Length: 614
Ligand code: F6R
Image (cartoon, rainbow, N blue to C red; front, side, top):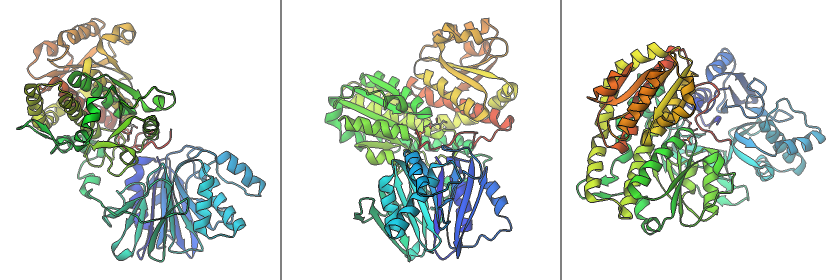
């Protein structure tokens, strides 16, 4: 969490920094700040959002061709002006912005206090810049060497940028565990740094993704990269593929709405070129290269957090159904700390939109250490998880900026469907006929998603209006649609702050049924396939207790409709693809309810999109 951005070049830095912070605001919005070099070192910071920072800087001198900015998701120290970044050193010459956590900051701080340092904030970050200054003064080394030596003393995760009053035109950035992208302008006339490529793409397509333990040093129009072990590196320049339109709202009121409506395309992109329905083959290199491994697998473990964990649960149903291989799905945060039993015949799949989630990354590192083959399903190209895995598949959903995950989830489920089918085919567990059926449905899935989006819009608005003031919601589903219920509940609670719980429909009678009365809206995924009759009985149980039924039903199914207060229709499809179609009305329901309640849907309170702390 936290977004960082920096610039040095021949143009004024301020506008780039502010625009960049707005693009990165999804990473945290507790406070925002900037520092500019303009003969001196000017720092402006403010509790709240980037807009508050803009207000603060109105009428102030913000000139300077080198500068940096930060948008914070608070970890150490409450979200106030003092704890906002940038933080400056004791003599005020150096400033730092930081994304991550310095775990040994208390020990470092104690030593610095003994040497006469005084601290203004409660943050771990301020300790780091004091440490750098202390080393520079006492060891008599230059700034770059002081940064390198300091980072050797640090335990934890960081992406940092450092400015020095006495080094105009110089930016020093470093990373370990948190992302940092360096953009290289035309003819090396300007350089950019940012937590992701979105602030940079408007200015250059040439970027380098710093590796862990690397330091980027930009001075006199030249970029050099070395490790904290002092080894010079030749950076690999990537060409950015993301377009500017992909990171703008494009006429929608919120990113979340835009991303919901992008799903016909994002789902298509997530499967494009990955199978051939005519000769029934797969073109997923990540599976082909590991064919012999896949044939001998003992089991699959899927790790993830939040929405990605829900996608993993869908994956469990699909892989077990098609490939007949045992699958366990674990919260990455639990998995990493419980000394799990992992063998070389396990495949560990990490699912992560950002590719940066600290717990997921750590779980994967642990599995790798224990000899498992590790595989990533990520959305952000070049992020940390794809860089440590043996193999993987990008979801290609395009940038997801709304904090609540929508199109990333449906793309993850699409990719998991392909993986389930691919593994089944490699292990000889699926017939050609069955493959043909699922491929045919996959091919028309984007159209069906489009159809759901068009068809359910009015009904969802009506339901939202009716239940926007509810205090609780229940979501129920069975089989592969149970994770869909979990996801529906998560979506509602995180953006509308209504308490919502997802349950396997049949579990309701073991407790949650006590909550049901005439005020309880219950969203039930009840497609004509799967456990239709069973779900029907569960609906009757809710009805008998006067609960309000909002059902998601297959088009033409009048039976469930007739006992529902509201029914949303989705087209018929294969069982395994129902989760994708059923999720869409739930996303819209959460969105509209949140908007009607006046909530900030793109930046819900206390959340951040990329959770790089554990
Ligand atoms: C919910 C949401 C979060 C993320 C979770 C994992 O809408 O977005 O629950 O799914 O923080 O993030 P990634 O997928 O980036 O690892």
